Length: 434
Image 1 (cartoon, rainbow, N blue to C red):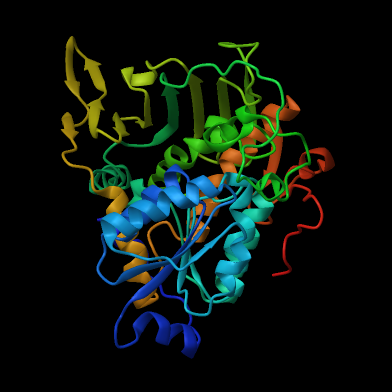
Image 2: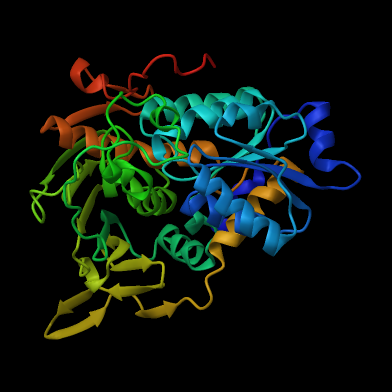
């Protein structure tokens, strides 16, 4: 299956020291968690289900999150992380740490990941890989230069039914594919009423939380989970769920990035709430032989195909629809001489049972740490899947079509759009030289 074949290539031989750390007599892998919020904790829980994993460090700018994580790690998994810190650099300084999990807000993905590679550690980084295309390319360069295993947390790559659907698309049975649609309608996401700025909660290093993002007063609406809806820290649903859905489109179609992007949308559902990113958005990308369409909405659950998320591949012979619950094929009908027949055999929905994709994704990363094979969502796959998402948001923010040089990863004759390719960092933070 496609999901099991991505790791066929391997990295160059790693250093003797890092090889000994991972493949020594005990075969134990020591990990540090950077970002102890919801996804960071979820990632660590699955890491600790794998034999030989030891958590030795926890890092979060919010002391309550570190304490919460340490409490369950100590009680449920009999682990005793001996480093609790607000500064991720102290985790990277530890010579006995083999890998880090980066579960921070999105604007803090690139720096810890790049610096971890430079420190000789492998990296499991949550999606979206980065908040800019330029960051993503540097993450790829750092992983390659330092021979690091870097996996993005797009666990759908480890779900067998997605691999089956991708294999079907690649088989050619759908005929010429002319349109790919991807979407996320998230009905549980309501509006966020505006609140005044305030002091940060006790035990929070707010300046460290901002990091490379612009300086501004603390507002609880921009903190923890809701950071996703502000341009300084993320890219809204386009990058939050687009990272998953566009990744499946890229996988099945064997593509890197589109040549153009245009987008419309806005804050139509809740025009007066506190969020910045659009609650309703459509993006249209052009590829040489097909087009791709994205759409999302918050506080609405009924999307295309009567599903709240998914990817649809429209071919001349039929359409394949896949989501986290399963996949199916709807054949096209040909009519001639008063008769009709299906262009291909119908494929009824194949529902998913107990979904273990996240745990399997973590296991794949750990297996690749030991074998040095490339993991399923290795860093360049993650980077390529994020390019379309970022281009969609750039086109939305500029209010016009943009053109992209796929091979050289730059805008075509558009200095204004190019300024979004790599974001400015607030001093003293800066992207490392790679």
